[in-house]
Amino acid sequence: MDKKSPGFIEKHGLWTHTQSEQASELRRRIEREPLQFVRMAWPDPHGASRAKAVALPAFLGALSDGYNINVATTTLDSANARTFSSFTRGGGMGLDEMTGSPNLTIVPDPSTFRVLPWAPGIGWVLCDEYFNSGVPFHFSPRQILRKQLRRLHERGMSYVVGLEVEWYLLRFAEEHLTDEHVGMPGVRGRPIKTFPAGHGDPGQCRRPRFRHEPAADDGGRNGPMSWAMRTEPQLDALVPTTRWRLRETTWPPLSLNGFEEVSLDRRSRTRYTSG
Image (tube, one colour):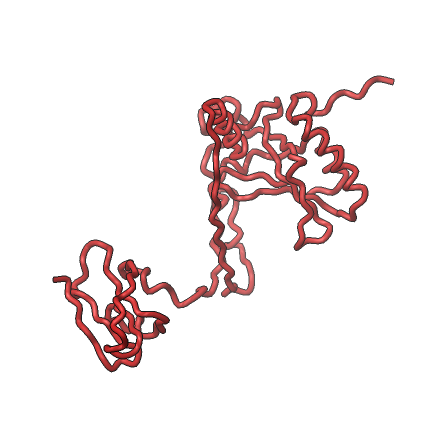
């Protein structure tokens, strides 16, 4: 019997010894757990997660040969509009290897495998992108990071990352998607309308930004707690929890020369001028 030829991963030496051992354990784990699909995910150049949901036989095959994908996610902007002439020589980038909009091979990193707690029966794994020649895809954020880490290591340096994750929970203001929402290749679809998440930040939306400074405690001589603020109707709804004085920090200066300190019960007002 002929010896089985090496798969894409082994042929190009894309895994470390540790990753190979993790892949073997992952195969055994998949046999034990009631999984249905695995989402093979990779970041696009904008940092957005792209993914293919594959059945278990396809994923087990990907642990040897990787999984074939189209290069399109690297030639679109963050709204999925085409930004390069992909089917011209050089792919519109002046790079011979991008001619003809080539397919890529994504290789799962077994150390990142998780079962999604919010999606029973669904696994998730991060992948690295390669040309079909085994050369790392140079627009892959993970490949770029890996390259920079090697450069830092050569200089005796390390890299520390702190993430600030922000998200918004919105309610749809339209009941159905239409053709204008979907768009077409190279044409952006219209984003679906949503209701505002809140009444807005009084320090934004064409109003100046302020720096908050605690006002000196006057021992209650001037009555209840108060806000120092511009006298705009939109700001009257603010309910303060402490005494503050706000100072303008933007340019150009306001036409109003100074601020008014407005007490919570509206009984007293004190004018503050810039002089």
